[in-house]
Length: 387
Image (cartoon, rainbow, N blue to C red; front, side, top):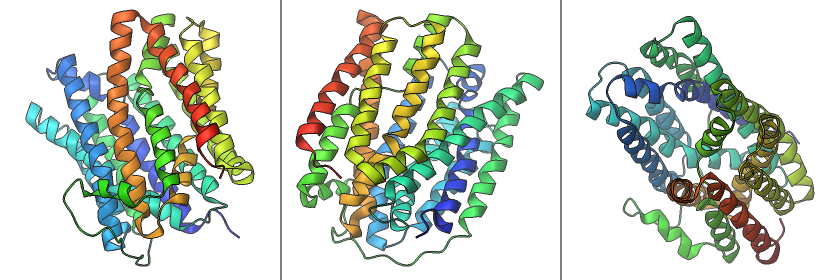
């Protein structure tokens, strides 16, 4: 049986080009915003609000996708909104306009995520899902590696031309949208949850299986202390004092993540999702404990290698696991519920990490998640059935 179907391949290439477009702007947006008058506080408020919008909307649009029994309209609209917002960043510099464009960009992510993942799930069996999601995550991460490299190369030859990058990012974004029109889908069974308001997807918790509830509770406990990767980069800069090493470490992490995602998906399909996930959590605990101990530059790269391996052993596998135990007619709702709650937890996790760093020192911002990861490992070992 063919594992990487035409639909899986196209969706993965779509994510690759979309991530090139998004990640081209990742190192540019904070600098551009400061140049047009945004303070660090307002940049933080902007990013927090935009990402919260994306997070809270994933569940709603996932449920709406299940209600309609359709995926592609949400995938198309989501990628379209994210892409058209990029060149519009450079049109006006008014704060309200920037807030609106950044929110539209993140809303696009919220609209498409659950429907796209449900579409990937439809293309796989329970025995092949980890490989399918691993392959998609691998391609997505390749885009996340290529994007910043393109932006840095452009700025090397054209320093300060930030507006041009917003226009340049529109090109891979358009390619990603055009590729979606090569896909077709069959109408799926309609959700049994019924219609409701924006937060009605929370009703899925009531009909979810006990296994789904136990799994998501464990994952959200971990998410509540798994802060943004920006703290790893800040620690790297603190230790090395070198921007080049910091950026190189981030690119290296993405390369490892991309290379290892499919192999770990294959291992999970063969041995069990639970075993590979727990192995990934062990790696996470090692990395965060290592960062708490003031590592040298060489050790930092070793830790980023392990961190890329951890990400490959968990991210695609989590979605495969959730889709395996979700009700078929509510797959997008189940994924959307989890990803919405995860986004909210990640927001609080970053606040917790920032507070620990500011009040007790950077080591506490890393040793605390490492300790929580060990607790989560014990929880999964005792409370979650092997899959």
